[in-house]
Image (tube, rainbow, N blue to C red; front, side, top):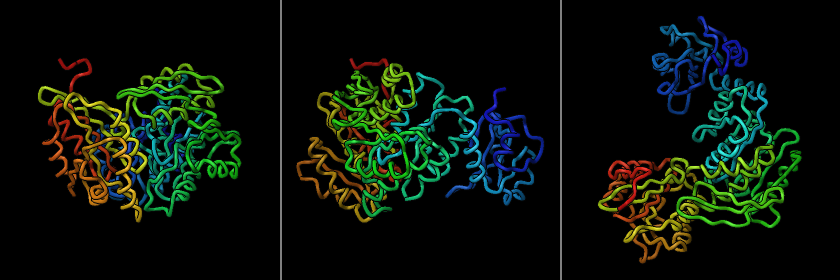
Length: 477
């Protein structure tokens, strides 16, 4: 059997103590007792809300080959007879395993951070690099203090390219994670107003993102957004920690990986890209200028990692928007169609602007409306009222005439919009979900966007539950 880890290597890397007769090895690693696969190891991580040790029995019932538990929790697990590896602290042991995984692996590694676009950029990298070899990348947005080491620990020894997303909402969060990942190429997509409640200003956010430079491998490279106002600062920070090669992407005339032109429609994008002095036409299977801009960073990373560039460009045509980040649904409503753009995963001022532009570029069917369904942007701190109010500008510039809102912070946007805009505001997400389901009509294009904590996935789910989806091959008569 092809093991991810042998049990002997697990015990050694984690500095653990085996109990019982361990299997020869494990096929995977899980921290979710509900979805664990046969032959996988269950790591009983204690999180902010739940303790994995409380679900060890379920993991065993669902096929775990062994469980990794903390020494202090062992007495409470006395009735379990499954093989165990006992460690001082499960999350710390996972971190040690992550470091061991990186050390045993010859993969070329790329890490992505930024205020906006991390997950989509990671998915573009996954697609583009797959043409050149076996790719290992984080699932979903596993970009925090447990997601990054888990992704590293899951990386097979024969991986050719590793793709990691590293997030933060406080200073000093990226630093320890990037030192585990040790990328050959690090990308910062952009610096924008996200998590402002934890920072004094954008400059502090830029400084926190710059922590990614500290883990870049000797001789490695960073790729920075030349169109962002913080490019100069980030350039200086990279040089200060000894990064050898600093590249840039964007529309700027001096960008190393330059976006020359962009054409988009409701479903796809076409860009003309300059990489290594060569201009090529590239098709991307997702809409939006923001996607195209980050696509330049992806092409640049592929070039620096020595990937097959023709294969990378061709692969991007097969990209599909990630769930909650621009995924589109064509729904049957009456004798017509409703287009749902699901941007419900998260929101900050920059990503809302991008989503509004995406809505503006999508043509409604006859008699339909463009409707922005927006919820609070969280973690804005003292800037909250201002940044919500300032969304009125891009909404009006895009010609969006129907804005349906939920959340206390969105009161500022409601008051900033003129009477010419159809505004509906609810304090609770559930109330807005009911209103949206009742109020949409054939031909409408509905874009749903909010911070994750506001729960706008409920609005998406309500629309999907009430209006059946057209199949891929189905067409309106």
